[in-house]
Image (cartoon, rainbow, N blue to C red; front, side, top):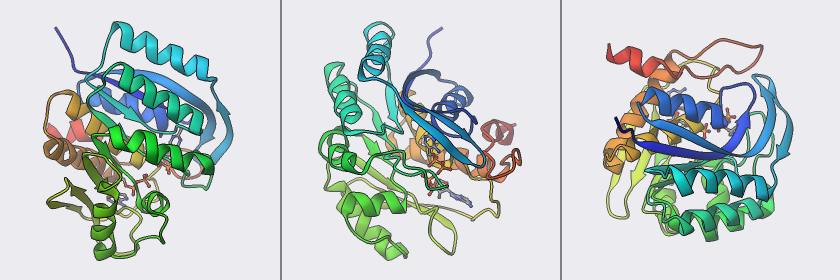
Length: 267
Ligand SMILES: Nc1ncnc2c1ncn2[C@@H]1O[C@H](COP(=O)(O)OP(=O)(O)O)[C@@H](O)[C@H]1O
Ligand SMILES: Cc1ncc(COP(=O)(O)OP(=O)(O)O)c(N)n1
């Protein structure tokens, strides 16, 4: 039996709701074979990030080489990359192994405010990784940082921003509207020509830790299975919506989403 293979290059979340842990759970739920290269360890729980411990370039390179030189991948998802040096390395490795389906979640700051990407690394992200991405999945603060503009507040602002983000080089842009103040949870998918709207009701819950990681991981899993970008993003939106609808009230702060909820919804 063969299985679509997906590699996440991201940070570890000891609390299990975001990062590598969220990605691997998502890959598993979507019937793909998940692998990992850890860029940084975070000591994290539902109350926040208590420590960030970047891994050496040598350790990161060795993990990527081990996976790609033997097993290979159908898609790669990147998350917390932390520094310009790590971004340069990841871009170099993706080119060296001719990785086709790269989903870049430009993780910058955790919901509690902890820095997951150094300020000086934004330039490297723009120059080296976005141009080789199949899909990028910024949230509104990340999009503002990439475009050096103020944060979008309306759907109209988002439409303009999605078009500007596409000029940075990725094949597709998924601009996430989770941070919009009012109204439904709308994301925009832009392919350079047409804008598609992915809209669901906004679910009332504070337990949304790891939403961005989970969504991007689901897109990568579907792409690895050979689905089109549009179909992959549609399935990922269903996946994250069910995960948020059944999110878990564990710990004393912002709980994680429920990665098993999508499968349950199909029964
Ligand atoms: N309360 C909510 N109800 C329904 N969908 C949501 C809610 N919050 C976020 N989403 C969706 O979750 C996905 C992740 O978005 P977002 O939370 O903006 O990402 P991030 O975790 O990177 O900040 C998007 O599809 C967004 O529309
Ligand atoms: C290790 C690690 N990577 C990424 C994040 C950010 O995840 P995200 O999905 O944006 O969710 P929040 O942390 O913002 O809830 C993280 N926290 N840790």
